[in-house]
Image (cartoon, rainbow, N blue to C red; front, top):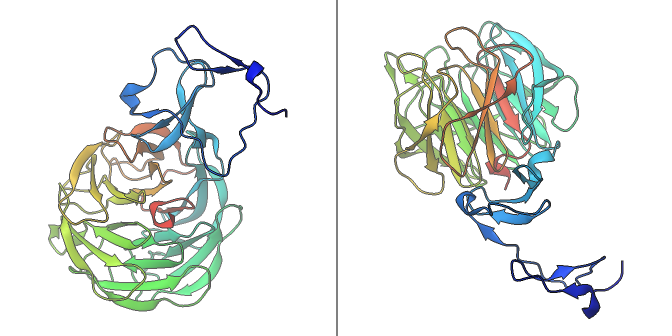
Length: 363
């Protein structure tokens, strides 16, 4: 590659900036600033290969000659994993979150079960609790970037199902569940090791069938059910410490059997039962407190689903519509709007656990 010379610079006719002819080298220890703007401000007739920063989606994107595509859209290493489900199965399958396609077989859980919860670091996914068919305290794990069967990790402090889970890059936290009534237990693990969970504290309201998501510092638990009533409660913890959860605000719709995912700043709750299958998506800003705001709708009414995410995209899989479904749909977390079809799970099922290697808790 030759260095940029003055005779390699040609002026355009005024419709664009300088044009570099031949190889160009920029020697600097600093950075280059790309053109930036919202989705609505995208150029209407760009040249193929045009590059810009989208301030709505917080991604670099390029024009492929037909449409704008996120530079990260073809990163197959960003994986979402779905494990177990109802009827009680041990199936694990995975997707590349940045690509729309059907799920691919990954391997098997150590125990066939449904109603578990999952959390993850950038390398390891961990599934805890569930029903097999009685309540389970099993924790098992996978290495997300590979495929293969899960390995025993240890046990939860309380045997329970329909719990929620979230994580930072180092610590996984499990909250709530049914054992054999609505439960307020929070316990945690160090994801990189193996061993039994340790007591963390209590939720602000004992409940089961809730959902959880996180930033790198804060875990948030939303919705659920106490005997006889769906809940709109949202509470939060500081993941790196221990202690009881604190009230955060309320969901837009009181519901159970919902799912949640997150970027580093925004948590999104989707679906649920309230008092029938629901397509509601609502969101919060994780670093603040306050009530959730309407986001849009899932592609179909459903409950008993699960969710995972990259730093930009949330994916919802499986559930009950009221029939058992293999639907996967997705959203762009930084925007609002209705979900879009993604593909299908390998097996139609309710109550899978889901996690990923690029969620908001890892940033």
